[in-house]
Image (cartoon, rainbow, N blue to C red; front, side, top):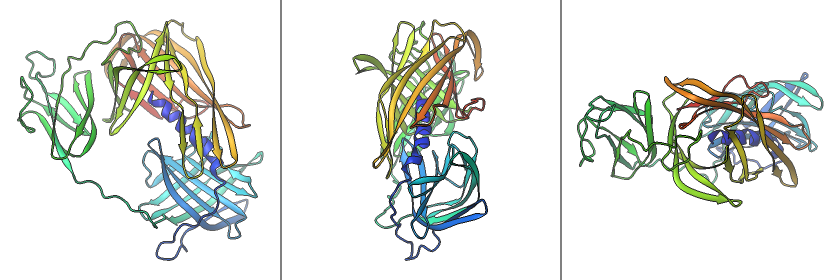
Length: 459
């Protein structure tokens, strides 16, 4: 499920502090000078400052990491700043989405506690194609003590040598969404609201067959750059969606049809072919479309149903199976790398729902073993998934639509990095309706309380 990706990103960010052993490599100066590439901060009245060695942006599983590494003039110490997010732009980044470390003689003098939410702040006042600038401050761990880092500043230019930014393609094509019947089906002529790539409109006229042109009256048509896009349609409380591909000079015709095949009636997470769900993010217009393809894949001698998840132009796969009353997801192992750090996560199967348990019953999966490696330094990562059934047979309303016979479950992900004690890192609450599937989930990263949602999707 998509929230697994968020957990692994938080896990990666917690481990990325071990990448701070990077060797010094001065970035190519802009205009022959790097005089403005500097950093500084104070702790306990003592000022630390020096030049910036490097600043770069990595992209790992769709998330952008900005890393800035500086040093003292005599190279006896190194300072690292890092922020991450789906889109880096000027703004405020707080732990766990920001990181600070200061190392001397191979030992951490100061480092942020990534589990202490909002304890450290990095403000990007500038980030563009030329470079970055900003400020930082907050609490950092020094030995067994907490220290206040104040008056932090930084500015640096991105490396230019040998870097060419490819031009954005100007190729485009047309898209038309059409329907045989209006909202309500049959002979209805009620308009259908549709969305493609965040642009909304209506289908107001209906036709018996696919249109011969790409701009028939009463349909919804739009011109878009070449690429893959998510579309959605709504009729009262029903919604459907999918993906479409725009080709150069082409005309992509997509029928809007609410007469989708029925899903299995008895399962809380149906896996039959063409079972599908459209989710909105935090009540907004962006959508995630999840589809059971009807295909299967085998891992470790077990057979899983293959699902696709389409989120804008991003598309990935998920693997599920059911045995008796237990629903499992399989997560393939992965190795993610930036210039200094390698994160290895294992392949594993975990149970996300057991549909015959009573409220307050618990179950667990794991432990699972991975690692964070930088050069000769390797730190083990061990995590588990602990689950609790919060409610059974419930009636809930999601986006104005009522559901009965709903199970609510909470999964808490606990991670242990190296010798540090295990700590809960991420949690998600899910609502499963019988015969329908997952109708809502809410993610939490404010460990350990998990009371402030930071990520919501609902059908």
